[in-house]
Image 1 (tube, helix red, strand yellow):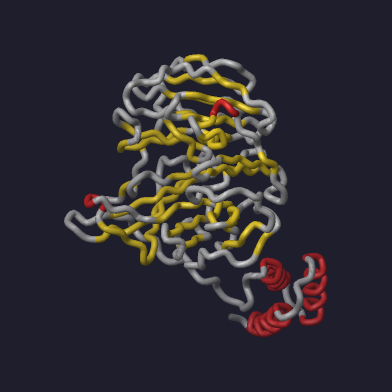
Image 2 (cartoon, rainbow, N blue to C red):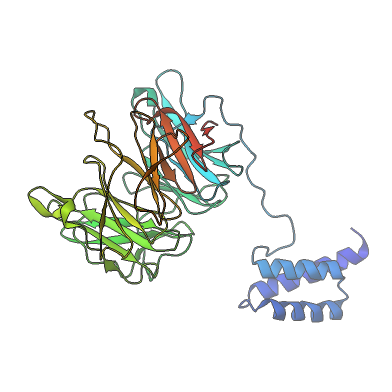
Length: 403
C-alpha cells in the first residue's frame, strides 16, 4: 500500500461508517455527497466509486472482502431422486429437484437439493444440513415438501409443520426460519407461494411463504369450509390465484384476480356432483393460463371446461374409454388454455387447443406427464410413475432425471 492509499483508506472507512448509520438517501444524493467528500479530501475516482457502490448496495459496511460462500462439495456417486419425485422448473432452464444419498446397508439417508441452469442437462447439488431420513430401501421418505420461489430461493417444509430449511443461493447456504405464520400480508407477492390452511371448526386460511423465508397469513382469504388437506393455491400465468377444497359434504372453488386481496366464488357444474351428495364435486382443478379452468374427474374419465370463472361449464368428450384397470385419467393444461389427456395403457395422447372444442390425436407418441412449472415430468413402467424419470420442455424431447 502506498502513502496515498494509506491516507485514503481511513477517510473512506469514516465516510462509510458515517453514512451507514444514517437513513438511506436515494442514489443521486449519494453520488453528490461522496463527490463533495472526495473533492474535500482528495480521494481518487476509484475510491469514490467504491464508496458509492458500498452505500447503494447496502451490503458493504466496512472496507474489505465480502464473506466467501462455503466451498463446493462434490455430490456422492449414489445421489438419486428422493422417493416420489419433487421437481420444479421456474423457467425452461432453471429448476430444482430433491435428491438423497443412502447407505448400502441400513442407516440414514442424507437429503440434497439439486439445481440446474441448463434445462437439466447438468445438475449441481448441496447437502441440506441436519436433514436425514431412514433408508429409502426400507420405505423411507424425506418427509419434506420442496417449495420453489425463484431460480435462487427454495424452502423445504417438514410434514410436521415445525421445520423449514430455506436457501437464497440455490442451496449453497441454509437458514432455518420458523414456518409458523407471523403477521399478515395484504396480497401474495410475485415471488411468494400461498398454501391453504385448515382450521378446525373455522373457515380456512391462507399462509404465504414470503421471499425472505418467513410466513404470514393473507389478510383477506375467502370464507370457505374446512378442507380435507393442506394444498397449494394454484397461480396462473396471468397472476390469478385459484383455491379449491372440500369437506365431507361440500366442495368449493375460488379465484382471485388481484393477488389475493379479494376472492370470487366459482360455481361448480351440478352434473359433477357425487351421487347422494349434491354439494360435493368429483374431480380436481387443472389450470395453467389462469383464464381457462378444467375440472378433471380422473376416476370417472369426465371433463368440464369454463372460460368465465364458472358462470358456464362445458362438458368435454373424453377421447379415451374408461379402462377396466384402476388407472386414472391423466390430464395436463397447456399454455394456450388447451388440455392434453393421456391414455396410459396404450401410450396415445390427445390434445385440444385453447380455442378448440374437441380433442385430436397427437401424431408422435408422448409419455404421460405432469407439469412441473415450466417443464413436464414423466415416469416409466405401466403406470408411468416408476423410475427412471424424465423431463421435457415440449413433451417431444426427453432428458433423464439424474444427478
